[in-house]
Image 1 (tube, protein in one colour):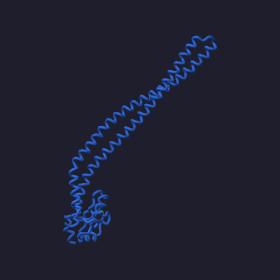
Image 2 (spheres, protein in one colour):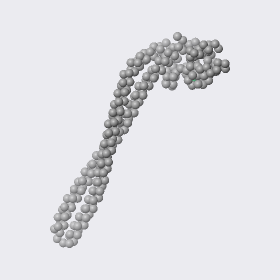
Image 3 (cartoon, protein in one colour):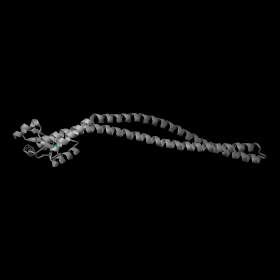
Image 4 (spheres, protein in one colour):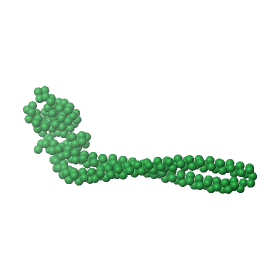
Length: 250
Ligand SMILES: [Zn+2]
């Protein structure tokens, strides 16, 4: 096998490996997205729960304030009934009115807070329903990922072994180039030389479609075990079998 044949072999294994890995990555990304959505809902629920507790504490304070005023009012009414003079009576009456007014204000605020508290209850119950739904979706995503892992795990290990074998007889510097290209182009390391016009000796890179000088093609034909790369996209070039005869005639 020539170096190019060995590289093509490695390229095929690499492509399959990347495709399988992509299936796992997709399931992992999906699960990650579900986790983030769920965390968002949960933190919103925690925030609303804290607000609800604060509101309840405020309502509790207002209830005891009102109870305090009611106590005072009862006392004032007793005093009012036993008022000895008109002046005393009027003074007590105006105290009653002030206390009543204060009670009314606090009660209004308390009612507003109670309304807010009910709204929060509604939001919290909606959120809990959403969280429950999201948890189901997350559980499915988790299951899907596990299934895919089980599905492809064996094949992945097989391909990794094949990849190790296929790369074992490739020189280090070529391997370095191969890996670099594989990372840059998501596994699309190799490009075939496409014939555009035989008569005009026009050829192009099969991946990036840039026309390439005939020298590059003839260099590739005579390369032996040297690697020739596309001048534009730098992928490793090879001559596809259907062209190899035609190209050999030049
Ligand atoms: Zn190219």
